[in-house]
Image 1 (cartoon, rainbow, N blue to C red):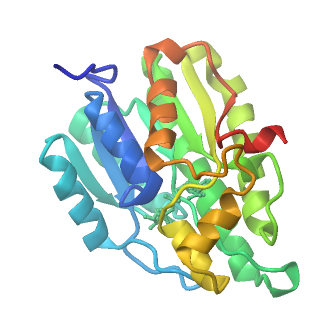
Image 2 (tube, rainbow, N blue to C red):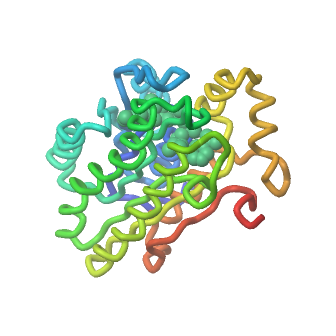
Image 3 (cartoon, rainbow, N blue to C red):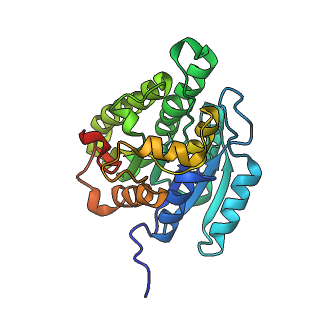
Length: 270
Ligand SMILES: NC(=O)c1ccc[n+]([C@@H]2O[C@H](COP(=O)([O-])OP(=O)(O)OC[C@H]3O[C@@H](n4cnc5c(N)ncnc54)[C@H](O)[C@@H]3O)[C@@H](O)[C@H]2O)c1
C-alpha cells in the first residue's frame, strides 16, 4: 500500500540528525515525502562526557536513509555558530528554493551537582540547546514568513517544564527553549508559521547511554532509573518522538502553536 505523503513538496532541516531522535525524525519526515537535510557536528565537544557524532556518523546515516528516500542530504553544521548555520540554510535555500520545516533537535546533556558544573559546561548546554535554536530560527524564519507557510518544532524535554536532578544547566537550557517557542509563536502567527515544542521523557539514545557511563551505571540501569517516572515505567522510542514531529509539521496542526506536546508516557502529570 502507498505511504501517505503529508510533507510532499516540503523541505526540512533537522539538526543533530546523525543518530537518536534526530535520525528518527529525519526518516519520518522523508517517509512523509519531504526533502530532508540532516545537520550534525564534525568536531568533538570536550565538555560533554560522552562522544557526539562526526562526519562519518552523519554520512553513514544519510547513506542508510537513501536506500528508501533519495532526497536526503548531509550538512556539517555546529548550531552554536551563526556563520555555520547561515551557510547551511543558505545552501538549502539555493538548492531547493525554500526551507519549510525546521526541527531544532541538537542537544547535549552533562549531569553534575552545581559545584562541579564548570562555566564551559554551562555554556555548551546553553549554546547548543538555546542559542543554536535561536540562530536556526533567526535565519530560517525570513523565508518562511515571506512565503506565508512554515513549521518550527523544537525538541525540548520534560526538563523544559520540570526540574531533573543534577541537571541545572540542561533544565535551564530546555526552559529557555520553551520560552523561545512561546515568544516566537506570537511573533510569526500572522504569517501562517507555527512554532511548537515536543517534550520527550526518557528515550534510549546515545545521550542516555553516555550519561549512564558518566554516572557509573549500565545503559539498562540508567534507562530504568530515568523511566521510573513514566506512567508505565517503560521508555518512549525515537519513533514516538518522530510521530509527534510529523503531526506538528502537517497541515492538520495548522492551528496549534506555542504548545508543548509531551511524549513522556505521562511523566509531566505527576
Ligand atoms: N534521549 C532522551 O531521553 C531525551 C529526552 C528528552 C529530550 N531529548 C532531546 O532530544 C534531542 C536529541 O537527543 P538524543 O537523545 O537523540 O541524543 P544523541 O546524543 O543521540 O543525539 C544528539 C545529536 O545532536 C548532535 N549535536 C550535539 N551538539 C550539536 C551542535 N552544536 N550542532 C549540531 N549537532 C549537534 C550530536 O552530535 C548528536 O548526533 C536533544 O535535544 C535532547 O535533549 C532526549
